[in-house]
Image 1: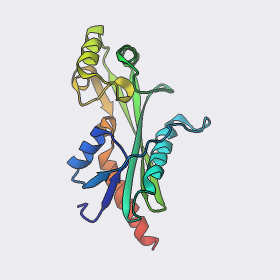
Image 2 (image 1 turned 180 degrees about the vertical axis):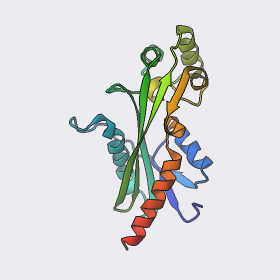
Image 3 (image 1 turned 60 degrees about the vertical axis):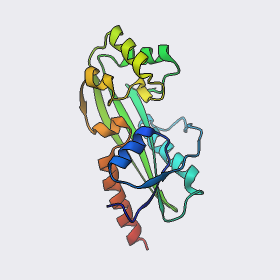
Image 4 (image 1 turned 120 degrees about the vertical axis):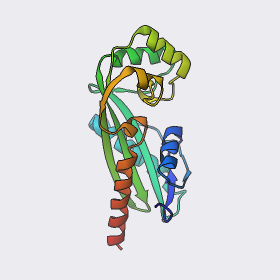
Length: 197
């Protein structure tokens, strides 16, 4: 299905790599670190899309004009507070206590870029946690070391099996990339590019 696509994934996330492979995409990975800052007046829901475009732009000069760059950024929002990656085990426990018994939003911004053509979109999923005991939190943090994960958890791990009551929206968005939506957007992106020639 993607044989005619030359795809570059601008992400070092093993979860995004795995999802694209499972979707049957052949791609190479190219990552240029960028400073993940953003204008102070930007609505927080738009931050992931802004950062995804920034990540895609950083690798564009290392890609051919026929290569499709896919970049993404995911944040966890509890109310209007951005919950980032934990700095250590104690911080991870603190984050999970804050998420315990509440609903939060996982927002992924995605940027598609080929040459000067750009298309971005955002996907949101609401995640509802059961109330987590200290024993559950300690077990998860000790066994799974969620230091590289926004919100200090991965839904596909033990905490997702035992601690999440329900979700509203795309499960794979919480994993790290809304693959179904991505495939639809690539088709629209390609159609738009063809009509512009």
